[in-house]
Length: 340
Image (cartoon, rainbow, N blue to C red):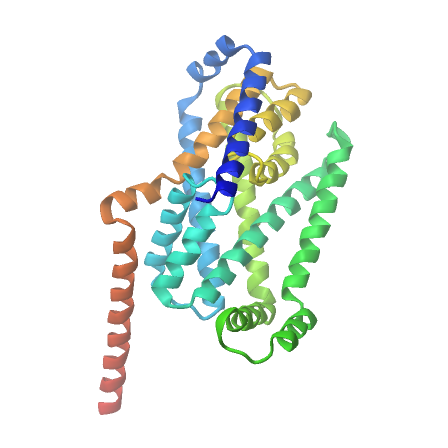
């Protein structure tokens, strides 16, 4: 790791630590334990089920994006790569560490590195857009009960900016300009850029597929909102569901900002600052934020189980073997058909 990256990691750790210390100095730490001791374990169990649901939905939308580019790797192995990447992403300091692991793993599996990176980037972009859309819809519908009208403007601006960015990524005119500047070269970074433009062009011609993935992404965000609400109900924090739809999507965006380590500190501050202003106990809001962060770790544990049982490389190697077997089966089927 370079000195610059070391310094960046140090700053993020410092921000996370400073925010946690600041919050704990202003809250009653001794009072926090009662929220955990009195928690409804049945609601906690239901919450864990919704975590598995949102992870499966996320894996499914990535498969749809991959197959939209003509990448038909064995789905079981693609799901394994997804869960492995979420697990290893938990330990990486950058906000896109898991996505990088996913792209590299798939490129080694399929030998389509550019398409793999393109699919992951599109997955990330649509995921962010769905967060903003969910938050924007909630803020517009419930703006009369929302104590911070300024956040509505912020979410609106970010939504428009993300939509504009998505439009630019898929713009045929921009693709033509890039292709004209690069030329027909198929070597080095120029060749990879040409392949990326071609991959984005395939997405542009399948807007229905992107719309379907966006709907799946919104489903993930709704599950995230429900998870926070269920945990709050488990601890009897007695905050209406409407505020979770208003606050959780913007908080998820804050969590992704590259100013802390995995959202530690920034997520806690956001939960306390927002939910305490609509009647939630600040100590309970802090405990809720800690549980939400822990929930993310729990959701990534299946990847740890896969790694413990199979290792990282074994998954990719077995996937290649499965792909070879599938190709052999197709060839045998073709021979049998020709003999008939």
